[in-house]
Length: 45
Image 1 (cartoon, one colour):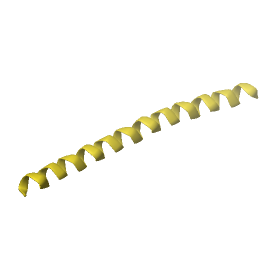
Image 2: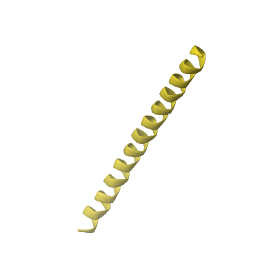
Image 3: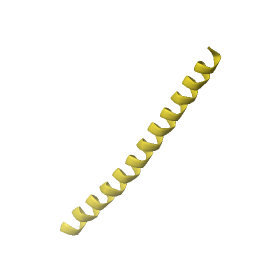
Image 4: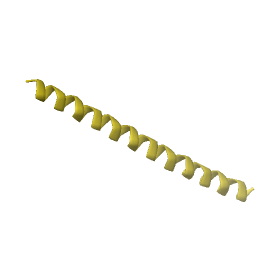
């Protein structure tokens, strides 16, 4: 019984780490995309 609890905790930790990594990755890419869009807007003016 104890082993299943430990494996569940480890699994949830891995999922949390994966989700946080995904969000930071997408946020970085989103910021870069916003910067590029801002640069294009400035060039139009």
